[in-house]
Structures are given as structure tokens and as C-alpha cells.
Length: 81
Image (cartoon, rainbow, N blue to C red; front, side, top):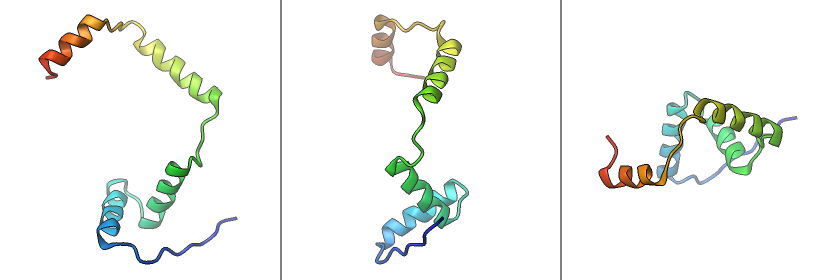
């Protein structure tokens, strides 16, 4: 069952940022608020099994790329393209 809330006295700058964020994500302001609440309160917690499966799949795709300390240090010094 859903609940309705009202938010009062939102500073204009914050409301503008909310509108921009909603537009960026192609959402209504209401949907953006719900998404931000879920994201920040952890309403969409992933089960460990799903997270581990995603990590394993990513490791299979990228496992052949081994980053050595020397490569990382050199890349930091040279900067990225």
C-alpha cells in the first residue's frame, strides 16, 4: 500500500537541482523523489547471491586483464588520454 507525503519549504536551489535530476533521468519529479529515497535509504538492497553472481560474471569478462602496480603507477604519472 502506498502512502502520500508532502514536502514543504524546499529551498529554490534544491528544487531546481531536483528538477534537473528528474529531467536527466527522464522521470517526473515525484518519481525522482521516490528513486532518491530508495537509493539513499537502501530500499533496493541486493541479495548477496545476486551481487556475487554479478561480480563473478564481471570477473569472467575481465579476468584476463591483470593490473600490475608498475602499470598503475606509470599510468598515474603519465595521465590518462
